[in-house]
Amino acid sequence: MTYQLPSNANVRLLDSYYKSDSLTNGRAFKSFFKELGEQVFVLNLRIYEDIGEFPLAYEEKNAYSSISYAIHSLTPYAWSECHVDIKQPMLSEDKESKPKDKWRFVDFWCMSANKQFEAYIESKKLWLNISENARWEFDSACCERIQKALNQLKDIKSAKVEMASLANGASFKVALFVIPLVYAPKGKPNLKDIESAPKCLEECLSGYLDDRKKMGLLMSVLDLRPFGGESASSDGPNPFTALVAIVWE
Image (cartoon, rainbow, N blue to C red; front, top):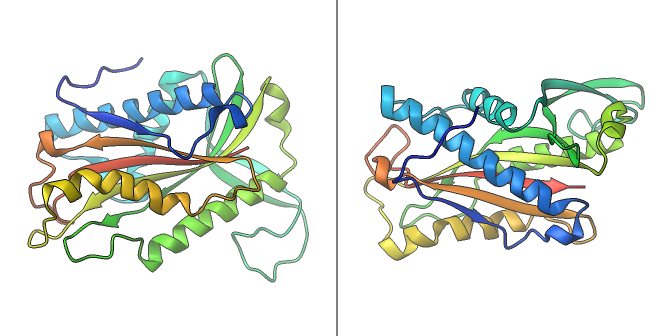
């Protein structure tokens, strides 16, 4: 079951760094991600409009339920905490670990309903401070989370994955980031800068793409201003929240 976005909800898809035809079934994944973003956002908006809470604004694990439900609403093939067998030292763990068989768990695995692709998804929570005098770049904690997610994707690519043969097309490894864009109450940017913030976020993340690899970047951005996003909260006003996928075939 899928839900309809409220009539005043504005969700934009940014794809400047995603070349559909350079990936196997890249257009199919882009369409899937567009629907995924809309479903994740509508689920959180329903909670917000009913009880005043927006789970995506909180900790990483607070987003899992809506991400999982959104995936299940789009395909019957979905699995949380999917295990894969790693055959070399895991980059996301101790650099001195010795080569040996290891299990690791992926936050989500899914396959499109028509079996055009499968996706192994690692989810992380980031944030971007867009206050007037801020640097508009990720802090060290966010940079570490991004790098950890990319190392996890490398681990998955090295894995002997048995389910890969189930999909008729591509096997994607996806770093999925939930990113609120926030500013300090006394540091509100001007309207032009606020409007440009999602594009700035896209540019920041594009630096993590490797042109030598089959990678792409997709962003689904929800404008929270019609829903009181510029009201002060514990983390400051939050005009936009983005769901971002770094995709690696």
